[in-house]
Length: 187
Length: 128
Image (cartoon, rainbow over all chains, first blue to last red; front, side, top):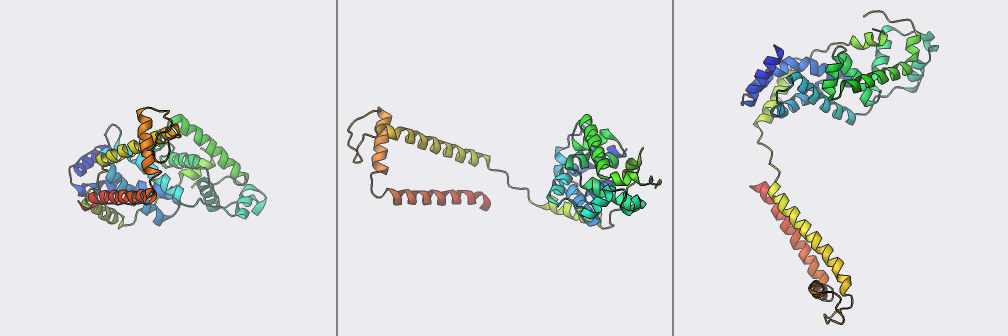
């Protein structure tokens, strides 16, 4: 249903009815802003990135051939844009003492409050090499759907699985202190 | 599902600000109303590229031929030909451009004229 509405709106936009693009924006603004936020962790910046993404999609609409779903093509286009704009941003940094605290279970008696733990994991994901960070972020964004993440990254599923595996191994190594603490309660 | 999965799966859900759609659509309308970008001048580019290539190849050819007629006197008088017709042409050029006293100013003027012409030609599509 959503795919049909997208295709219909795209046809109207390509026929010269620019206002029809608003339906696409309303339908996809949530996912695009949230995806951007997962990468940059800044609400204002996420909205700017999503706005740029919509402009890019609008310009690139004539190149959508319709052989894949509009959302598949859109996420692949958006990911290229997000990745290039994130590479221009300074990489996230973690203060040395905080990083040492994460790795050492004795620090702070090895206890992490739930929100601290979440924040530490998010920062650690943001500090991963790009290929692992992108795979992990998209995998969880698409509710652990490897196929959807692979399509958005324009990569084979096997490559995404390998990157997920390596990325998670890196995360576990970097966050060794967290896993020594008592298990986090269900959110 | 382990702790890592659980934490990374439970992200906060942002709701875009109410003016987000309005801002995006304003930018989209501006983009749609803007005149289409100038197409790249492939014909002129190909013509210029071809000319540059011909000049480069011609210069290289001359550079390759000139040492062959090193026995030719600067005045142009042949003292010992080692090349045929091409050698004679190179000798003539050498006599003209190397031995001729005002060569440097002439070449400078020629370069300036060439640059001026190139700038005029490149500005033309912008005015059209």
